Length: 568
Image (cartoon, rainbow, N blue to C red; front, top):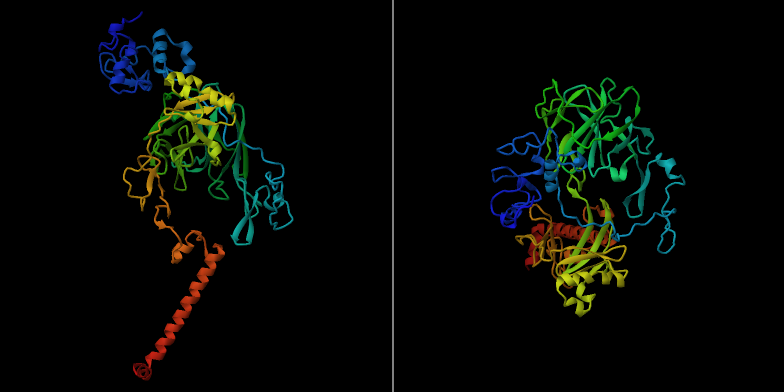
């Protein structure tokens, strides 16, 4: 059935859930149509996707549940084949998304290099780098499979220390930690779901359920299905208390929405052993576990659930609560606002991060591309196909994104924008070293096949601080976020410092001007440069001479007869 054009956006809902005829009306009223796409019957309210078939009366007429037939979480992509016509139509409306910008064919920068077999060889000039050896022992003999490193105590003063793996400790990693060695094999249905898996070692004897250690895994079936994961879980105290019972709990969350999915409970046998080795094969679910019936537990700030592998109930706590009955509050101030807090260890929060964030407190953001703007010039600093948390890069003129008017002839530049875009593949095909270029609307990347891959670029985006009160002496204040952002000062000529507080024109006569760039902050005098040491020594000698001279002068002129001769 087709709707006549004169009935579109006429204020009267004629289509199912106002899916098409009121689309313009939603846009006019600045309502995010991709998020709020279900309109309640005989009402002006619009609901999100999560409100469909959630067993709640979110609409006044309860029409968000009329076609569900007890199908929770209706609009999963993998379940479209089992939906009736009206269900399918509704889910197609809600799950319609624009095709996102892709980096699958991008030329990565900085390029990845393989580590040479001989780590002491410099690949640039093929010269050997000599390192001072403490002893003629191999690293495994010194550190027992640990990492053997040199610790700098001062100039030409080194000692050696060992970084031990989790299963060993000691100054030479000579002692074994009491631990649980867990091997997991993870598998799932091939669905575009990113899982957050939290493995915790905890006590089972009291209501506190103290967490001793934990490990988090981010799992995507596309990359990690069937792979083995080895985890070491340590006890908080060496010489664990053998009179207590310990267990391993494995909680699974949907990393996109941080929705809880399911849990496994593994009992540790033979607790008297110093090392317990365990293994498990886990098939991750694609939807959450329903609340069990006949649960006798009282969960104050949580939900009663049942373990996936045991006929045993437990309380799955809400964010910010812990304990066997979810009755113990947790200080979650360390976790980022968009994360969830599931416990604490040694007064440090255990945070589960959403997709795209990482770090102990979910305050770091993963990225694939970094573009740097310097004096209205753009440089490509990082380009990755996969998300990375540790990247070392540099910027040079080769990474400059060239303006399009330097690449295309005047004849093509004079064309209307829609026609000119069709010629944007020419620069990538003429210059194989070209990485990116820009025009007044787009940033374009050259792909591996030497085609252009463009996305909109907002040139007018300003990072200037709202109130430039942080930077001094005419410096420009930049801020990475509008609220609670970090500030950076861009100083004018002849000024320097974190707030442009230092004047550097010419050579001043004060020690502050002469030595400020030689001082190494947060280092002892022994770790300072030779200039600083000589300056400090000279200042101390002058101070001592002045002190002695002043004391002797006092002794001389303290005598009354000496003052008489001075007066004459």
